Image (tube, rainbow, N blue to C red):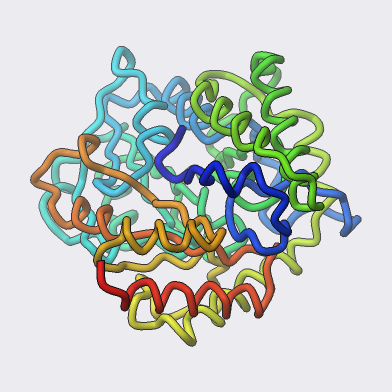
Length: 363
């Protein structure tokens, strides 16, 4: 199970409470309610469709064979660190501040030609382009991790490779996209399908979550989701044809972007004092609404009790070295309030009110 997931309390899973009162968790399989023509706004003819982000990073390292991979001190262990095979390359951390900015220090002077530098667009907001430019001057390859920025229009500027995660944004059982530059040949025909047992569990979790949202009282979707997260493949594995079809034809991304931005702004109107990003730039479509709050775990549990399930991006204790203290402090106070396209103004108002009550209540 990845640190960003959050377990549903058993009593909530087993009751037949109205699905519309639940906020957060896996997005159920799309119904192709928005049949569309043309290609998605993030698609190009230089995209490789893979099973997940871990596979994409593994493939890129296997292709480039960098001596070192530079990774931020604020990151997803499963998505990035577990994609790096220590037998093939080493990794080094660079510092990330408590506001998710990257300080200008000496680490870029240590970058060697051929190194791979991973820069993350946290929650849909852009990474520091100056850092990317400096790393490229040193001869490094740049991977823009846009897993949290699928629909943000700033993505791709100055990066060699771009990584998108589809599952975080729409209802598909699997899928990520690795975009290649013109200078690098996109691998052709080298991908295999993941284990059928893994993929069918992912599909079943997605379908059952959709049924759950329709009012079917079941907790099976979450158990399956946890199993697929714990056994996520790493290697040269392809996105399924079903996920590719839904990604291309089944979603109106303008609706997704508008709802996410509107919901973010609704939360910002109430929770600006807690917001990690207190300004919603016009080129950003947010993954969620990250907040910093004292007594994070207690506040989060009170949200759980009201059927609101904010994930934590990410738990870092034991993941990054202890001298990256700002990143570690942030990881102990952050959580992400859901603001995706499944929800509307009333949901955001309800969530904001419960959050405020919980954060102001004594421990």
